[in-house]
Structure formats: C-alpha cells, structure tokens
Image (cartoon, rainbow, N blue to C red; front, top):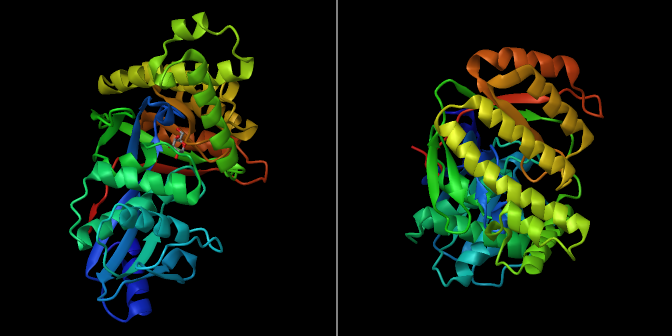
Length: 384
Ligand code: GLA
C-alpha cells in the first residue's frame, strides 16, 4: 500500500472507527504551455502528474457530511446536506469540499450523508492544482457512492463552478479538466471552448521536470481576477466573444483606441494560443528543439506582456534554459506570481540540469529550489 493510501485510510479509521468502503484519487497537474488561455476559450497543453489527492469514504444513513483532513492535523468539518451550505474560512480546505457539494445539490442531484477522509501529496501553493485535485477527488467519490453517473467533463465543470462561485477565484477549466480526464503517458491538447481534448504522446525518453522556485504565490486571486477582466475588456473592444477568436493580424489592425496595457494582455493570449497549438505538434513528432523555442517565447510573453512572473522565477528559467540548451525547454507554469517552472528534456540531461539549478539558484529567502521529475498519470479514478 502506498504511503498516501496508508495515511488516508489511517485518518479515516481513527476518525470514524471503521474501515472506508470507497477510495478514489485525483491528480494535480503541470501545464506544459498555454497559460491564461483557458478562460479566453483558448488552448492549453497540461498533463496530470503522479502527485494526487486521495479520498476515503463510507456512506451514512443520515444527511450529515463529516470530513477529516489528514494534512491539516486531522482537522474536521461537518455540515448537513439538508441545510443551506455556508462558508468556513477558518481553514484553507473546507470550502473546497463545501463548494463542490453545494454545486451538486444545486443541480438537484441526490447526495446522501457520508464520512470522508482526505490526504494528498500535491505540493500546496505551488501552482500544481492541489485544490482542483481535491475538488475533483471529492466529486468523483460522491459521484460513485451516489450513483450520479456524472461524466469526467461534468465533474470538471462542477469543480470549476465551485471554485468560481463558492471559493471566489475566477479560474478557467484547465486544472479541473486535466485532473478529471488526464491520460497516462500523454499531455492533453484541450480546446477550452469545445472541451475536446487530443492526447499527445510524451516521448518515452522525455523527462517532465517541475522546479519549485520557493517563491510563495502572493495576492494570487486578486491579480488573477484582474488579468481575466483585462482580457474580457480586450475581447469587448474587438467585439469578439473571446480572445480565442482573434489572430495576431486582427489584433494589430484593430488596436487603435485600446489602452497599451490591455493590448499587451491580449497579445499574450493571442500569441500563446498559437504557441500552444504549435507546441502540441512539436511534441507529437518529438521535436524538442522547436518545443524549447516555443516555451521560451511563452515565458517571455508571460514576463513582458502578461506580467505574471517574478524576478526569481525569471532567473530560474534562464538557468534551466541554459543547462538544457537546444534539447528541450523551460518556462514558468501555472497562474503565476511565484510557484513552479516546468522543464522538458531528455532523461539523460536531468542530472546536469538539476546540478546547475542547485549551483546557481537561490530564492530571495535563501532557499534552494525543489525538483521533481514527474510522470503523466491518468485522471481521477478508483483506487484498488
Ligand atoms: C490557474 C487557473 C487555470 C489557468 C491557469 C493559468 O491554474 O486555475 O484555470 O487559468 O491558472 O493558465
């Protein structure tokens, strides 16, 4: 039994005195390219990773939902499904559970009471979607226990709505969708308008490295929501439903009257959409050199046009890019303002890249970066 599975089962047994009946998992994710494009109806290229959230559960005969969080000192939450679901802001995790349950009930879906234990190993606050993996794991668990027959895409949409309406972050669909629908050994090129996803095989020899900068992500929600508003303002200026509908030529041709900052934000999204499509093609044919060029351009665009990087991350990306050379690429990944860098390279280069980062990088706090080499995993599933 994995360490995580042992931990979640032990937490369940010590809280509720019996063994759980159901065990489900949902992964975190790393986005290879396509940042802040999802809420503009654009393209993203993430893969689900082998860090995940586990939920152990058993049904109850009443309408109470009791939850114990193993990663928060066995902190507890308890509420009644027959009463309006309110917020609990005294701990970082209960609102994710309450939010998804509230969305299920709003849909008129029948959910019976349950006891749940939650444990995860997705690094938190790192931009690897620990919260999406929690939302999707809880939904998948309740889906199964209550025979709701929700598809993976429906689960992702409910999780996103919980985050938008209950938690208050206006995130797009990427994190929840890849956590629900990821494919082992593949990244998914997701069209965030149609929600179609094309699996792109990751070359056998490719290492997916995640490097945590040790810069905490601050003011994330407010800056994120502001970027989203700027993108929506740009779409209104161009009179298109979303920035997805704009090419670079149309962006430039219609720029008159748009303030320079909003134009910059729009330029990031428009160019990033094209880079994401190109990167999926490059990855599919194993062209790591081209992939590296696209990743570098993506990072520059996030730094200069979208302005969501921080100086320490820019340095970290440069160090990784130098060590990788023309054999792959590196860029900041996730919402921004701290967090992680994703670096792609042949396995044979991993040790050298790691050594270079250890030698040349320090966070402003003096901390060294943490490096994980990940594997692409399948989306939410039952644990056997
Ligand atoms: C966060 C959001 C996603 C996406 C990324 C940026 O992870 O949750 O929806 O917008 O930022 O690409």
